Amino acid sequence: MVINISADASELGLKASQFAAGKLNEAIRQNGEARLVVSTGSSQFETLQSLLHEKVEWEKVEVFHLDEYIGLPVAHVASFRKYLYERFINHVRIRKFHSVDVEGDIDQKIKTLTLEIRKKPIDIGLIGIGVNGHIAFNDPPADFDTREAYIIVRLDDQCRLQQVNEGWFKSIEDVPEKAVSMTPWQIMQCKTIISCVPHKVKAVSVRNTLINNLTNIVPATMLKQHPDFHLYLDNNSASEIVPL
Image 1 (cartoon, rainbow, N blue to C red):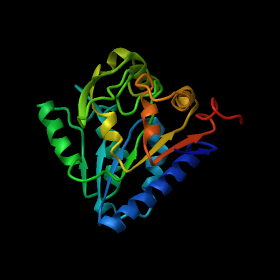
Image 2 (image 1 turned 180 degrees about the vertical axis):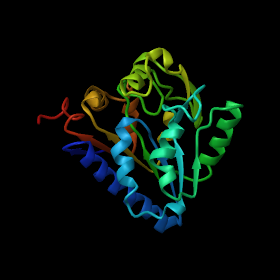
Image 3 (image 1 turned 90 degrees about the horizontal axis):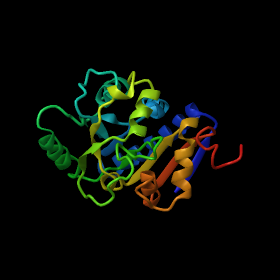
């Protein structure tokens, strides 16, 4: 595990995007292509914005994302697909975007996504950490045993409240109770994991991730088992673990 602490979210996003771009370009040099998993949420704003300005042959990059609410149309302000289209996908000419679609037969959609993500290794995962320590929508106690790629999960109240506090919904009652999420096991198959976790609201979850041994009560502890895990913090999110 490598921990990088920046002064603020903007510096964090710049450093993380430069590192991610380097890894993408390395994969393209070696394999002629790269495969990337991206996260959403307010903690990823600066990283994705900075990544748009990096020199990457995006036409050689396939992109997957982690999760999507069930029952939420893509036009909804809180849709993660909408988020990614508006903040990333529509601004670069990527080879293909494998969206987590939740309309129609969700089980069939999961099977199709599983086939796609397992065709070749994933080079980089940009994996956020939630206020409750979740990765993707794997809230505690997360399922560390499944070897599925994507599963249907039920969101806990702390996770749903985070979505309200970030401004995506007006009340917790408006937040869907279920979502499709990439599993912890599938996340761990990424060759490199880069976790961008800025802001004071994440300080406790960062501390809990670092001080605890592997436990599904703090799902992000799984990331520490990865051989190439890079954790990007700012002074606010690191405030519970290091003196400033």
